[in-house]
Figure 1: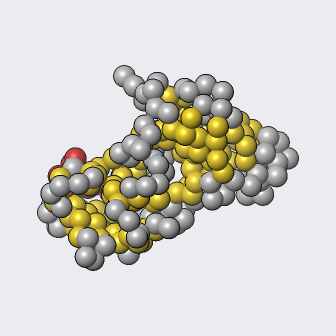
Figure 2: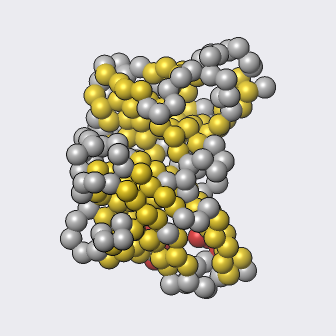
Figure 3: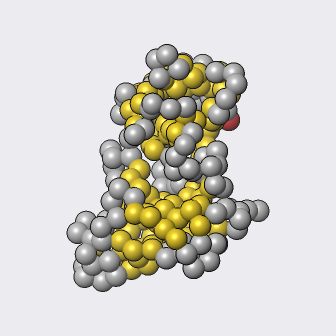
Length: 112
Length: 114
């Protein structure tokens, strides 16, 4: 079955370390997105990509980086510059001008 | 720019009672509207969407929503809730001219009590 896979489900990081969250989809969707979710704040857009080798900053891109070398993959790196990285991270994909997103099951990142 | 307001952050109800989760949006152009549900520690699942046509939209799990253009609202309703409906619900909007990007509301936590 087609879908989006995020890994790992839980991730622990020491302060000062970079960490990369994986997002892979087999839906043949062109657009992919990364959101951060904190309690009471809904979903905030970090980065999005409408096509391979191109991506745009969302509303809270500082301290994060992405790449889009393949249509299927859109990894997110949380860098040491992100001051408060502990959160639930969601990846999503859609077709262009599409009718909503398909979401992955999320990665919960905790800084220890 | 588009925006979405979910008017209630928490809605507690008893099992088998009706429920309405309110959503208002702001946009100067035509929009498409969505409701998603999120169970704890999971991603979001699409409940229903309004693209065009009939303003009353039926979704999964017995939910429905009504698009009201004059009031810029898209409230979600269910006539009789179950314990299993306990989850967080997100309203989202996409402007016709904004590509595929959605803007989400801040969510409404629905808690169904026995």
